[in-house]
Image (cartoon, rainbow, N blue to C red; front, side, top):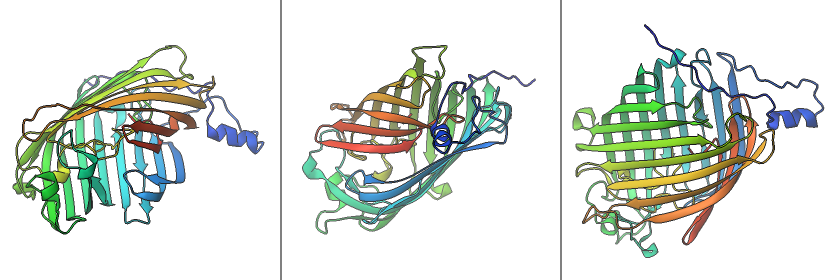
Length: 388
């Protein structure tokens, strides 16, 4: 017998988005107060922009396209989405990331994917939470990622699945001829000049998810546990394992008013390699969570270790009653373990705030403009959708 469960729905009555604003501006009479989110209909959000790339990447051009759609009865099926965010700059950095979150009818099956092709020169500081700024070193490499996981619902909101993960770092080069990556990091795996590093393995996954929209979650909770085994049988350079545990909670502070955002969002994750052999660029690092959303206000890659713990809280609030404009305030904390003792001795805070502009009320997609800061660093991030 197939069990079903009713989802908390996106109520668009009384809401406004940029599409409505454009209709008014161009004096269109084709306005409506309720969006009919039908099965098979696709809701696109598109954002082209020029910005400054974090981590010393210089000016960049980036476009972000998000497509939301239902593959079943929206009363019992989550919103599926594709996100494609190509970017490039004039300092050698280039990326083609495609992420997918596909929910099949009645949420019986769920397919999560992350595919990337990247040319990604980036700074690194070595291992541990107490590396000084003077340890900064630029590392150049090419990167291919292919992650796919298929989940089966075993009871309401609880899923179990299996997947395949591939990380291929190519032509890894430091920028100092007499001071290579191994010298800076003190780490032996995946640090030789010019080498390729291939990690290929299967994953075993557990997922608990009461949200119905990953683009902008409504009140609910999310927990994901991933155990990864890399093996030469699948082409990996060496055998190593890791665990990734991600938990999120969304608390509505004004239930009964869906058009007005007033939510406390909480997020924490723990990521650890369980044995020796993990390549340096595959070790846990801030900003390298599954969707590269952690560490707002910090430089990506600033802290790296064999284990990482991260936590963040964000307050989300509408400014206008129709939900068109809103704001967020956030704070986060990062810690990695020390290479010699494996202990978490240093904790690094960051914080900031941001503006939200509703671009598509049917998929509840916001343009997110965030300013974050930490000791000695600040940055602006522009995204479609929430950070988590």
